[in-house]
Length: 242
Image (cartoon, rainbow, N blue to C red; front, side, top):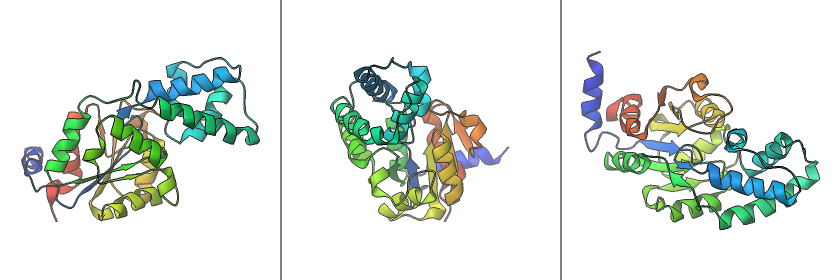
């Protein structure tokens, strides 16, 4: 019981996280993108004469990339796709989504302050997302979040996407970090699988987009609010110990 105040004190030290890398998922972890993503999916469904899905129905389909979301969306709408139809629909989805990428998307409450705190404590921050890199940077630019990150590694910037550990490894390499001083922060099974395979500590948020509840994915720490993130990172990394 006496150890926790000590860790919190160390975590407040400006150099406590020097050399640490925090790899963060984007959709459902940093930014609430569901309305714009599902809005685009429903536009595509309507274009194909298929009924719309509710936010609750479609939210779990976010996180594995747009192709997965399209395939699962059409399946859920009882209009499963033949494989040859996916690419043309994907191209239309991306064009529409990019034009509406930040209509309603916003950082989750407290996210910006938490990231600024982590940077002030010496951590390097990178985005590790199954979203395409160009779409990710467009979204981050629109929300004035790009300034917080040392690298953005999307699905097309890595040899394999989450849950493959090479995605995290590519993100850490991009910022010159060490896997031994890395924490993954995400919301879903793809993040949990990548972190476990890469053997890095895992923080999950309880408010993201996931088919399996985050509490059932065995994170090292589950957080309900972003103001809990800096101290959670400090605990997992020993508050800046070498």
